[in-house]
Amino acid sequence: MTNAQWFMLVGGLLLVMGLTASILKRSPITSAIVYLAVGLLVGPSVLDLFHFNPLKESMLLETLTEVAVLISLFAAGIKMPVPVNFTRWRMPILLATVSMAITVAMVAVFAYYVLGMPLGAGVLLGAILAPTDPVLATDIQIRHPGDHDHLRFTLTCEAGMNDGSAFPFVMLGLGLLGLHDLGDFGINWLLVDVLWATLAGIAIGVVAGVALAHAGWKLRSKPHQHQLMDDFLGLGLIGVVYGLTIMANGWGFLAVFFAAVALRQTELKLALGAHLAFDSSKTQQIARAYGMPNTEPEPLPTVSFGSLVFKEHIERLSEVVLVLLIGGSLYLNSWTWQAVGLSLFLFVVVRPLSVVISLLGTHTTWRIRGLAGWFGVRGIGSLYYLMYAIQHGLPEALSLQLIQMTLIVVTLSILLHGTSVKPLMELFWRRRH
Image 1: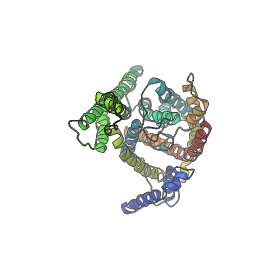
Image 2: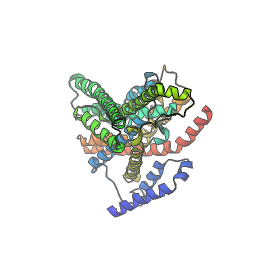
Image 3: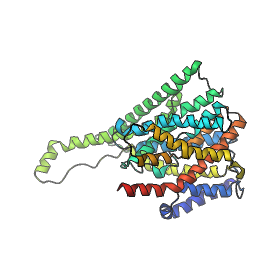
Image 4: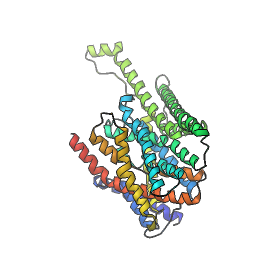
């Protein structure tokens, strides 16, 4: 397929999706299924018009998936409701840590005993498949900053955090394969890859998000009243935070997510403080006493809200391109019993069991636990970790094996979760109300 034909394919698909948006919204499937179907049709599975080779293009695919995940993490962090407290965040934290570790362990055991893979490869496979996806799971995530749905919040927050919390397990798998220094008895892995990288990522993200919020608020307030380019500020925050965290040997995905959370939370606190200060002012009290009109000024715009729309457009475009590439990477013989069996084991056994175990002792309803246990969407994040491992020297034979299994898991996730999300979520809302 030439560049001109590729542009025609993507452009035509975007036109069709744009013209039929209302029809797709009422249909029982997600947009990712449409993109996947087109990719399978024009790919080697059916018409064989083009074939994308993830192994040869691993550097390109790593970059594309990296950008897509960063944009999605930033958009997810901005939508987090206020305020941040441990009671509300307890469930997603448990899912992003305890459930994550259980998933990696169970997949590693399955890969070692059933698939006959080395232990290091099994751990790496578990780390690749463990994180839920912030890109392809938009239908079960928070839709806007004012959305306070508990299930949506939990799944969005989990996806925002576990794309960073999976990194230590990726490094553990690479270390067991001899591609990363774990240190004596794993001390380097524990101190650097787990503790330092995690804490550094969170700290850098929070500090940067708070700093940008105060800077933007001050420049927009009197006497400056500057007009700011929120899209540039949002993208700039992503780039600076991610780059700085990587240079500090921290986990950049965690940093970008918490930078967005800190930015949104700080801006809303500043806006609330300004509103309370104005409402309690003597002038406003006198105006209310004499029945005069409310003289409260228009609220100042925020960087987080102003940059959200643009980020969502980039997120949708990246979803189109990457899911098309997934469909164009699969052959009919890619559907082996090992790959399909691993996918079903992950969706039907590992994810529900890990959710139930991690939420023991919480007061979460079984209905929410059940839905959270099913909607462990795998997608672009898994592809990024796979390409990351390949770029760090993974042997070709093992790379091809992991590529096949990861692509089948992501494809089945798109199909199974994409066809069940709307009916199940509608049933959940109907019973709740």
